[in-house]
Image (cartoon, rainbow, N blue to C red; front, side):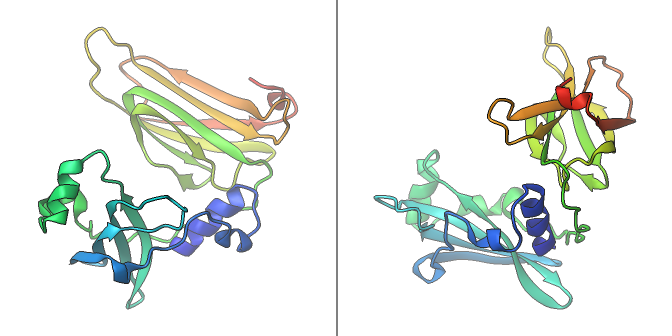
Length: 238
């Protein structure tokens, strides 16, 4: 699962695979120097939580105490490392102080428990014709997108830019949106805008918008299928 996701992200950025796996600015921390706070399993998911001076090899002058969570998935009868979550405690000094004194009450919160959901490995994406981005501004709505077979995290009352897995191809690309309304403050307006953008590598025009779609009413379509066309006309910008 994680191998395919990593491969798809690298290929979608137009980078060589697997060489680019090793072109990262950080290194795994030495966990034997950290204090283990918890080992927890929920179904086919598990995690180990560590606290201490998490050294990511970034040549920092000093390394403060922080938290790193290593996540694992049970796949084909074996536990495999999936990903990690690094928690910078600079903004919550009371949590850092509590951990330094041996207290870790925050780990009882539901968000710090393995969710028990074993993800299905996605398909391998194509090599993109065009490295592309999906931009979603979704205020007053929760919007989830599917593009040419790959789905993206929902965007609710926020704006996000997401790398299009497999990029866009010349011609027609199928985009599906699922939309739900959310509460908006009195006097505020709803606004949903979805754009598809090509990353050109041209200094004069580094990005070109080839698709845009807007909606503002309180009764959006629950689901809508759209077409993202990459052609000489749309590549001039829309």
